[in-house]
Length: 227
Ligand code: DX5
Ligand code: ZN
Image (tube, rainbow, N blue to C red):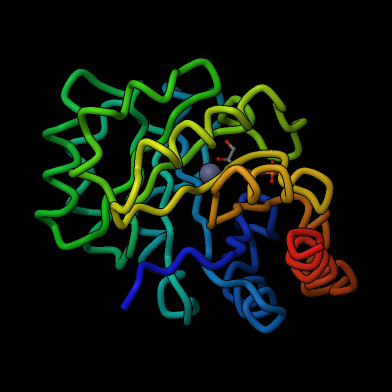
């Protein structure tokens, strides 16, 4: 079977109601979410703090699709086993987060998860060239990591195309993270991305109490990429 490069939308629970993760996840999956993106921040690698492996473990039973954990933490190696044990399907680490990324990626696969590597907007595509056989996913940050609701950085689109050609036939997903909307999604989809993270565009400050925004933009993002 050929590798699945179909479009997948991964709502980021960073923009969900933190007191209601279970219901929030069920709501977006019911509206067509393909993966659930979980942003882990440590207040050191990025200037914001979210949550750790215990929260991932607690939300795992609510996720029917794919748990996609994005670690914005440094150091990272000591925590890989705990995130793998929490039930993460994908664990993505930043190439900027440590000196031994190759070893970290080995540890992720060794712990039974799929390995992802993320690149900040200021990091060139070439930074992952030596790691292509070590990864299942490359995450191109299209904002500087740390917060939801930031503006998409258009200069990153060319990097997506560059990575797509570097990857060739390798079974590696290209994920986009930051500022994805129905306006920006078609640009990165055309450049070769297949997983689009969307936080504020999906949740829009909504919640299970105010479900109107749910799904509106999951389907709008998918529709925009088809037209
Ligand atoms: C940013 C996070 C993103 C964030 C995206 O550091 O990694 O996943 O939730 O949020 P939006 O879609 O609002 O830019
Ligand atoms: Zn993220």
